[in-house]
View (cartoon, rainbow, N blue to C red):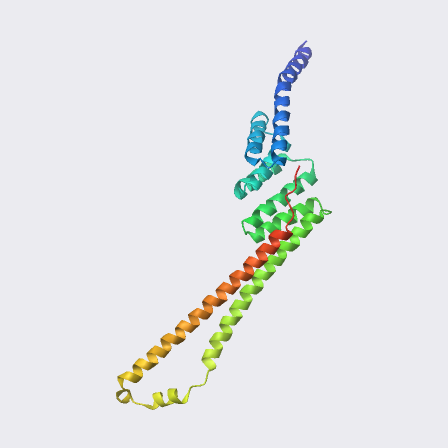
Amino acid sequence: MKMKLIILLISLLSVFSLPAQKAVRKNIKQGNKSYNEQKYEKAAENYEEAIKLNPNALEANFNLGNTLYRQNEWDKSIEQQNHYLLLEKNDSQKASSSWHNIGNALLHKKELQKSMEAYKMALRMNPEDDETRYNLAVVQKMINDQEQEQEDNQQQEQDKDQKQDNQPESPDQQQDKEKKPEEQNEPEQMSRDNAKQILQAIEQDEKETQKRLNEMKAEERKQKAEENRRQNKDW
């Protein structure tokens, strides 16, 4: 008798949950339609409504993460994809796609090391994913270029310091050293001060010029990476 009651109760629960399941499916379908039409705000509303009805709806959670990405909400997109990964227990390819999309969002945030690790996680779950392998190569190249640029800048500073230290003294400088302090008149002192100020101004201008060049190079690399970067993976 008790077994029959339990079975009857389960059947009633299934019947009562059927409208909710249909509502979830309807919201996801509407969200997908809005997403494909690039109406991302509306799509996000549909996915969020589906998640309210069923917090474990995998497709709604995954697609909401992608929709937030399309709205340039990098942090929220990463948070949503991480939430999806907590729910996804069976499909390694879908989990790989989620890690891929996290890597894309981190790349937009210029967190290159974290982006690289996300792509590696994606490849661990789906080693055959050529798009993720390509993105990983791109971000590794950006990291290497960044490190090389830092090394070049350090070497330039060292070479500049060494050149200044090894620069031979001019005859005027040697003559100035031989003079006693009381023999140096005021106009000569002012002349040397002016020369020092001019030299400092030239050095500052060189530093600013080098900084601008480095920024231009970084922007060119960024634009190239943006052009080559693949689109986010969809459900």
